[in-house]
Length: 410
Image (tube, rainbow, N blue to C red; front, side, top):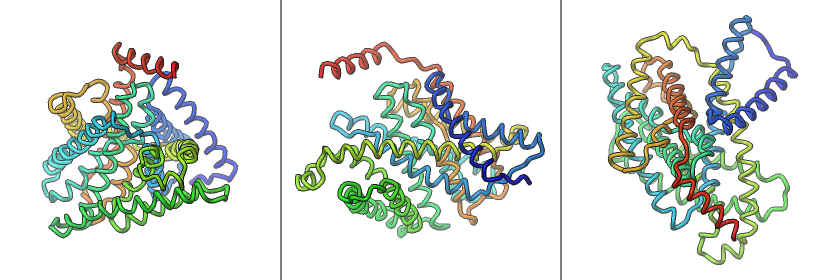
């Protein structure tokens, strides 16, 4: 096995960062999702290492660590990007119910497919495998909506963020034990209340740290505290990701807080400055973590799974079900626009992370991980086609021009 020297490791890491930046530029020019390009880079590196006889082993723990930190950064980034106002109430409500309803039906249908494919497994085990595949990846959606109109962009960002949180909360609920009873349901409901209360305390303490301390190095200290909160909450089976999202929302929408003593203690102007800088640091950190996570995950993908008809059949059935359910909700139940929202069904970071965390006692031993790779790659390609072929409608362009003119006059 080839051992990298320190200089080779540094050179490789920096080269990947530069390449990822070029992929981001290419994404804005061609709408090719940068995450797909990163996955392709990882697969290419795997092929080259095999061709030249230089295999390189990456510990599975590295993927889990990068995925956990990346998830925290991405949810915080989503919270810092979302603005709350009265004119957005309907948008937030619609995106939440879209994430919730589609997730519930996706878990049911995908779980049913697993139950048919693995009849010897219990319903609970099938549900555990269905949950990760039912979560929309905000890690892929967020960098892929820059060309959309404001309403479409915000709908998809909210929906993906809610989907992440709902998926993790559901996963934690079903992973607690082999049986579901009133006690577990009561704890699940209570954990949400605890998470909201914890959010209030965390927001106050972190804003105190950001605005009132004179230490220059404090932003990465905030990230460290958020990671501690997330991992601690995960150990206690609390939806701590909700706490992180609320912190980002509060920082980015401080003007909506009505209690005047808080505004005297934390002036809006100072909070806005902190929010702007926090956005910059979070975006940079998310970019860095996303780069290494998807390249490493791509390196671990063995395309031999494409030659397995069982993998392709089950994977195609899952992707087809996800598309059909989204079509039914958006067009028939919600009467929402289909294009390009229908195509934004990527599975990615959170799906991989939850698969890694499935308890040993709930694992399906005969499950082929090629199904996971198939669904992630296929849904990413579907997003790519939806993004490439989407063009702003004249009405939306008019709205954008009117908004620009209003800002110009102001």
